[in-house]
Length: 429
Ligand code: PLP
Image 1 (cartoon, rainbow, N blue to C red):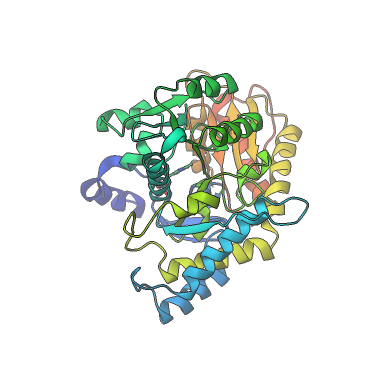
Image 2: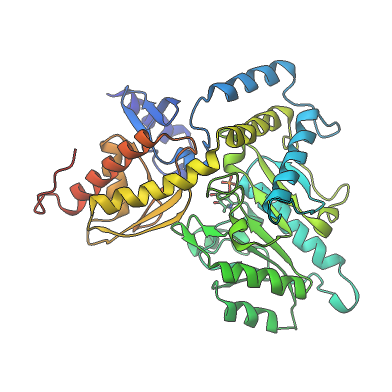
């Protein structure tokens, strides 16, 4: 029996089955390559689902972990540490940079809360919306029945609050009832205006992703995001931008909301922030940074000095190695590659930077599930984010050669699934 199968047998016995059967047992990873326990190598175009921003085992991250772990890993939030405060300051500065005009940073009085994951960041953001609604008084009073708007096809996490603003019925149904007064709308301006027109239950806030990752890497129209900003502001509601997947340079900008030229009230982060080390963040801007008061929220591990040192180093390397630029040029390279390869089974290539959805022209027995499985057989890791779309979210420092090698395997795998007898007579290496 292969070592993979041996370990998978024990996984089936001892691990809860919520993730289904793992596709591989990975033993080690370096840069944009993984090796499984049987010694097979894979190119990694998924980056742990947009997490391994610097690839695997980046030497500077390893050194940072080593140095910080020897000094102090955790002290509790009765205390603070220099890495924690430095990271909060750095994230606040990045938000200022992202909201500036002509190179002059904006001024947002941003304050940060550090968490351990995306869903935990979303929980904190939802608490900010709720507390804002409950504390409102006078003419702009929203109150506890204030609605939270989320978008159809959204994904914000699996804890009960975050699940309440995640639209997929399959994820929600087993856990109903979830938190009340959540309404899902399409990302259109008429839908937005209609939702705000109902004054019997005012809107407390909107949560949205600028690019809906789990929906199949679907960018939300910039005009919608701009209108969401305008209408929330005019109605005393909050705008939360969930950048758990899109933030920290993934889309070729520090934050995906930059393309809409808006200033959100709250931004959630996780995934790429720790480059593989678990950490999340909530950044609250302007008035919202004062909403959570002592005792309103907490976390034991969130903001520990080890995670903060790693995140600071990730941000420093993204800046120093000009990885936002690499993400942007890599997107162009992906589009160019598939244009040159003239693959007739590709319907659309979407996304920004290194968050890419490749939509296939599916037919019976041939779709992204089959293509992703074939890729794995051929030594490439990608994700079938839905039935028709392959998601790529590789390391932001992936080299052009590695990217190209991965794309060629993807191209070959698509042909092997859609044209198994090679009737088109394509030559692919
Ligand atoms: N928000 C968005 C936009 C996400 O894509 C995800 C995870 O995919 C989450 C929240 C939840 O993050 P986590 O899995 O770290 O809890």
